[in-house]
Image 1 (cartoon, rainbow, N blue to C red):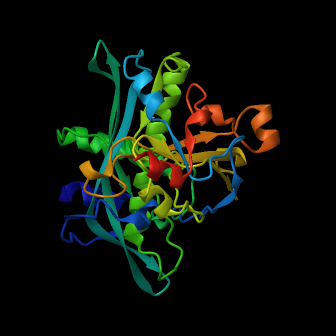
Image 2: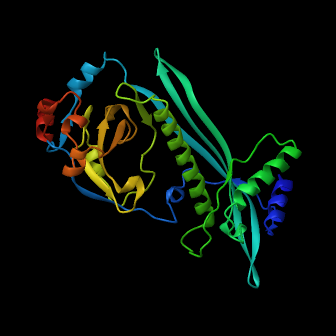
Length: 323
């Protein structure tokens, strides 16, 4: 490993320090922030045609669907582990500036359910490096791809069993509130999310996803920390097999083409069988894509209430009486 790190330092006119290697916090929420273009999401308004006053009860629909043909047939998830593997210094005027080198193991996979069994549909595993952007002192567009090629050739010479898929530069602008390690991890997180989105795009291209074959993704479609959030108490108090009203959100940047999207929460498991009031709750996101949805800024309540369960919409008081 030290030989590879020395090779990186030599190729980039830096100085490696062979510092201690350790795993960075895999749950570091700061690493989910896009430092280059922080996004803001704002709540617009109620987002359905026939909104419930509190919760929509879907228990009767759940019983009907229990014996129905399964439509949740694809399952997608990603994972990453990140490690600080060295510090590297570059000359900045009269002094050296020191930056971390971060390595990441990124995995994304998709399973398909058929005949009540899960089968591997697609799997991607990458090793990536995140280096400071000052590594490319000349700002050349092809610098990092060329460095990947050189690095992989070196790894092959040394008979290392791994190859580097990509080098992800992180921003080194001076801001004491942003740690360089967090910026590096953010780049690796973004790579994982892009890999997941590429897997979804591949499924769409191959005609695998339709109204009889839905995809379940672990995590939010937005991959951002929203400024506007739904009241957590409303979600925590969700009765079993019920959902919150639909809320419309809108991004202030151009992510998803600047589209509005609908969000609601559905409780699948009773709280008494869970360790947390948020266990067993699914967040549903739907981008407004039809002309009618875009014009009204709403989705039809039937979209959130399968088979039109408007007659099962209860107020909080009615729900308590039913219990």
